[in-house]
Image 1 (cartoon, helix red, strand yellow):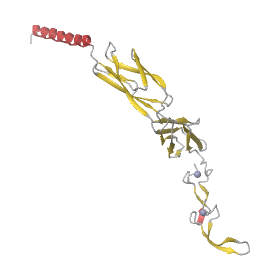
Image 2 (image 1 turned 90 degrees about the vertical axis):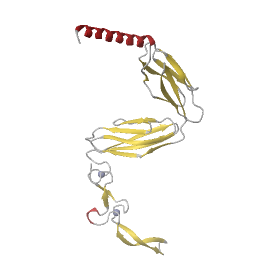
Image 3 (image 1 turned 60 degrees about the vertical axis):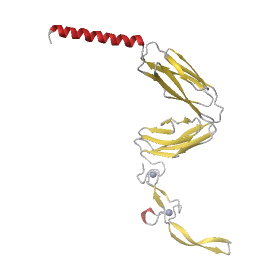
Length: 261
Ligand SMILES: [Zn+2]
Ligand SMILES: [Zn+2]
């Protein structure tokens, strides 16, 4: 290829490049369209807010293609503004707002709660090591659940999963109650963060046997006492729970598994 051919190729390439570039701008085609939120969760008594929209269409030709009858929407510049009233349908309602820009579309799901009819948590208690960390609890409710978390730990509800985070604990074991509220329902998650000393056994590693109340023996046979008119124990055996030996009357602490912290 001589210099002329190279120069010609360059000019042709440049011309084609300009032509393609120009056609993109003049047609103002949309190749990208997105929204800042995928799902909007509304409380039963409604609410309002905004969602940012993004496109490479310079003229911002946003069109509301669909909106639920219970959500009013408007678009100004690149911001969608929505308002929803009270949900008095007795059921959770769900629909999408669809925004179009040329041939592209984006959906934003709207979910509106109703008054809760149930609330439960599983499990109802969690234990974290003294090093801290995260534990999760499943939350079941058909209403809007609010979390009341004490200082010292954090509890974050995302969907139906409650994440409980605790920092490293160098002091004594600590216990907390995280309360969940959904209208008139409340549930509590007991949170124990282990420390240098177990709060249940005070560091001993064992607790009084709950079966024999520390006696080490339980009644195996009762007899009727005619004098007192009551049944009284006539024979005792070693407690099946704590048995005999060094743990007589005591059992391994179920909270620290005998470690004492
Ligand atoms: Zn016992
Ligand atoms: Zn213990």
